[in-house]
Amino acid sequence: MAEGLALLRSVADSLDSLGLAVCVFDDDDNCLLWNRCFFRFFPEHTHHVYVGEPYRANLRRFYQGRLVGDELAKIDQYIDAGIARHRAQNRPYALEHLGVRLWVSSLPLPGIGRIRIWQAHTSATDPQGPTILATTAIDGAALFDHVPDGVMVTGADDRILRANGPFEQMYGLPNRTAAIGAHLEWAYRTAWQGQESQSPALFEAGLLTLSEYTRFTGAPFELPLPGARCSRVIGQRSPDGKGFWAHVDITMLKRQQEQLQVAERRARESEAILQEKSALLEATLANMDQGVMMVNADRVVVVCNRRARELLNLPQSLLDSRPTLDALTDYQLAAGELAHVPEEVLTAVRTGDIFNRPYAYDRKRRDGRVLEIHSMPIAGGGVLRTYTDITERRHAEERIRHVARHDGLTALVNREVFLESLAAATVAAEPGAVGFAVHFIDIDRFKPINDNYGHAIGDKVLALLADRMRAVARDGDVVARMGGDEFAVLQCKVERFEQALGLAHRLLEGIGRDMEIESHQLLVGASIGVALYPDAGLDADTLLRNADVAMYAAKSHGRDCVRVYGAHDNPASVY
Image (cartoon, rainbow, N blue to C red):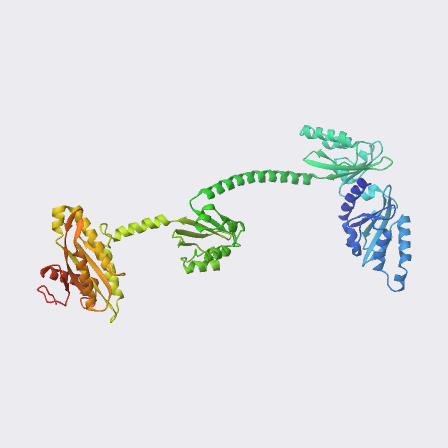
């Protein structure tokens, strides 16, 4: 019975396309199956009817929506009459339900029960109703000609008793009566006639399938047909040995399956290629020296390689949680890692501007390392960020800058840097504000040391003198080697003449102390000229020139002394 119901389900679903409602009941008037059209005609049964429901319950819902007043009190009488009509009905009759005129027929199904079929009919002038329901018994030719699939009925000897139009068309028969008395194999050979040589393997496979499966009913099988067509066949026998066979054209389904198989194969191949590329990409990301992070359009961090985790000092547990960029920023803020990030960049991260335009900046980490960070928007949303440790590069650049701006022997700033600092001091100075002083220093009695002990000893003397001058100068003062044995000091925040003179004498004292270099007892002195801003000049060139004039005045007065421009009478005076 289960196999018969499966076949009836297929027929009921096919009748849906014809606008025919179907409901099947067993011999005890319990519901077995129904199709979708049944609910279109009788919406009151939606979500209520179930397999095994008595026809009486079905009728009760039907009449509860139709009867009113005194008639509703007689509902059980209506139900009893409906059941009697259902069991004895042998001709179609008409009824109107929810504004639609319906023709209904109740037909017996041997071995199962009964089938009720409803069809909408809009013409009130045709008392006989639709042709398909006008028969008083199951007329296969009339009923199944309206089924889109092929149908054949066979006798106990497996010879065809009846076949519908779709069966005739599927197997290329001249007419439906041509198959009467023949076996299905004959119809199959007729379909292939003249085309066997084109696909002999398929043809022979179909014959083998027929010989194996037609002996048994209930098990569906497929028959290949010429023109790359295919029929799916399922049969069911009645107790008297008659067979009911449905032939469904599954050509489009097979083509779709083949297309799906091709697509699946290509997808597997593409997946294998993708996996290979993904593995290569993962290996590349895992071993590259540059940190890489990708944030999707929803601001979720979807890629963060090992190097990025190391450079940013991020825990793996945080990244495993698939954090947002905002959560990552909050974590780094709390860890003190973003203290040196420009506010403009932090704002761009918070507002999402980094998703709209590129950003590049250097970030100094809490441990002193310097990271070069680039943010590049990705087409379609998201951003790609790269992190490069440029700490050594920055150190190298700083060393280069230091060498370019400092004297290699004494590590003091060179003449160029001193002039820059002096020029900056003159620009920053304001009328009436605290001034500054320029000290120009020339080392006395240095040449004999070079001549007597060599330049190596002389270089050590200059380096030692530089250390002594640096020790005497205050923080913020600029001490420079101007060249050879000439030095200069830019003394900041000089409010009184005595402050400048005091530094000059401390420099003189420091320079004049005894030195012991490689067992040599050595002694030098200095002539120092001082120029005060603004009295001795308002620009860097004038101040340095006047400090030099004062230095020569000190030399002419016996060396080892200090002269302040404009404050001492001397033969070289220019004031």
